[in-house]
Image 1: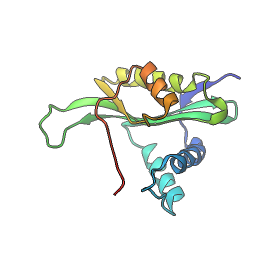
Image 2: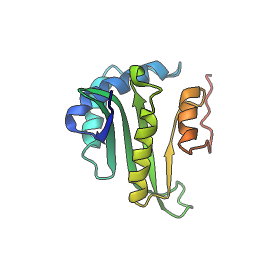
Image 3: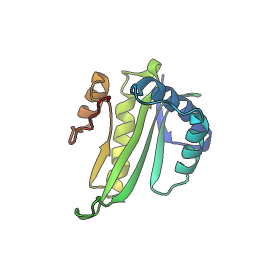
Length: 157
C-alpha cells in the first residue's frame, strides 16, 4: 500500500483526535487521569492549533485511512529565567502511527519531512519528548539523530 505524506487538513482532525486520545489513555502514568471532557478539549486544542502560523501537521495517508500523523511547531524560544539568548527551534509535539502500519518506516518519513520543514524555517534545533522505555520509540528517534539531553523523571508519593 502506498503511503502519501501530506499537510494536515481540517477533515483530518477527528481521526487525529481519536488516535491521540487513545494513545494518551494507554500511556498515562498511574498518577494521571484522563479528563471527562478530554475529547472536546482535544478537539478545541487541535482546531486552534491548525490555525496557528507557527504550527503544522503532517498526515501519512493510506488511501482513505490516516495511517499516522505528526504535530509540530516552530518558535523563537526564550529560556525561563531569561538567561539564554533566544533562538529558533522546532518542537515535535506528537508522532503517531496506527498499529497496523507500524514498522514500515512511516514514523521516519513523518519525522524526516518535519525536520526538512523546520530546517527550511531556519530552526537551529528540534526538541521532542518520547517514552525512553519504549524500545521502538527510542530506536525511531535515535535513527532520526535525536539523543536524550535532560531526563524528565517522576516518582509516586
